[in-house]
Amino acid sequence: MQDFVVDRLTQDHGNIGRVLSLMSLQLGFLNKENTTGLALLGTAVNYLSYFPGILHHPLEELMFDSVRRSAPVMGETYGRLVREHAELASAAVGLSASIGLQQLGHDADLARLQLQGEEYVMAYANHLQFEEAEVLPQALEVLNKRQWTDIQTRFVFKRDPLFNRERLSLYENLYDALMGESANLDKAVATE
Image (cartoon, rainbow, N blue to C red; front, side):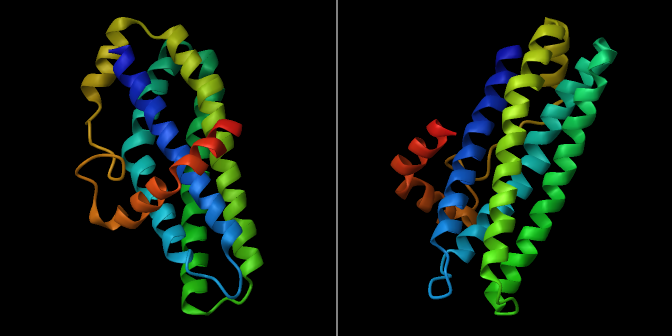
């Protein structure tokens, strides 16, 4: 049971990292003459709001809630986890709004959007690193087999809407871009 939860979270982190790398590339390509990447950025932010917020973060929070009950001293880590999830959700809403305004031509400051996007990408990447370096190791140290089974039983398993055969049509262009940039993204993820 432990393997299911840890493998699922690790796979999700890798997929999220690929989307973040693509976002970073797209942000770098944007300029006043070329804003075609805005639609793709909007789709990426939508995915990063929908999938982690609805399916990934609840699994992490379920897992770490068990850790917190077993080892109350780890409550500070749990608080940070939940706080960062909320901050990322809020930042995604702001970034999505900025992308929409840019697409509608209501915001001429493309550099501000690029900075906002890069800050979001960096915050998310740092959050993933925190989870890999602190959250998962603490869970592996504290939880027993029964607790891992309970987490898996309580978690409603749903497929990633981007990285599976039944992906939502909303994410087709994002999937195509990820597959087209696969070699570049793999290099970018490896160097982060």
